[in-house]
Length: 140
Figure 1 (cartoon, rainbow, N blue to C red):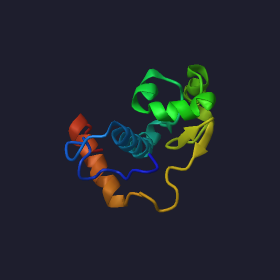
Figure 2 (cartoon, rainbow, N blue to C red; figure 1 turned 60 degrees about the vertical axis):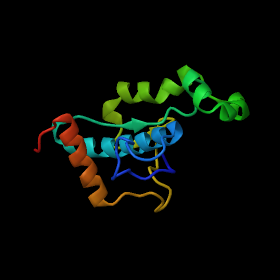
Figure 3 (tube, rainbow, N blue to C red; figure 1 turned 60 degrees about the horizontal axis):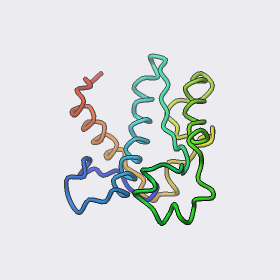
């Protein structure tokens, strides 16, 4: 996610040479921005929204997508249970955390490192319009 900008010209990766790793990172970027937008939209209704990173977990998907990474990082990859900890905690304690943040290990994490790949308000607006159009969410 940190290495990818919000893909305002191609949300569905219809252009260019496809890369599963890049598609995952772009999708994670979109998920984080979307969680922030939904938090704004739903907070008046008492609904909390979060995005999270489970940490690097030893899964078949990771093994297939990044076998070299798994070989090097294998000893420190998380178990399924430890990867699920933060999402379970978020679901069990929705009144204890502020809505719209990106979480890992039960703590808010930055969504960008400095200005790198930071989206503009116009980029965010265009993405929100795309999501509304693609899903049928009406204007409020």
